[in-house]
Image (cartoon, rainbow, N blue to C red; front, top):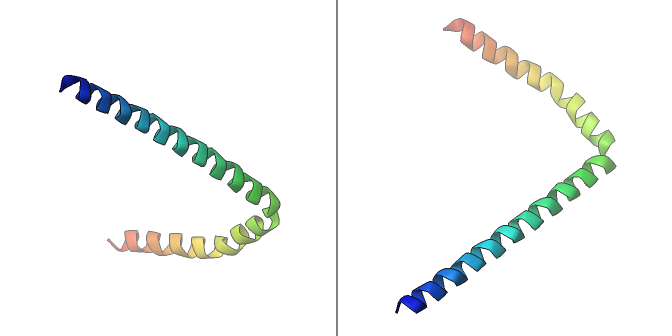
Length: 70
């Protein structure tokens, strides 16, 4: 009985380690893919940032006005 519990504990530990390793590999792959797409589309990223600066300033202005009202 105790031997079976010990074996089950070991298999769960190995499974957890494999799952963690898979998550690390997938995470690194997505980081690399994101970096590649960011590099390839740098002009689009700059255009997106330039396009959202105005909306961001409007949002900040509304927040400051709401805080001043209180």
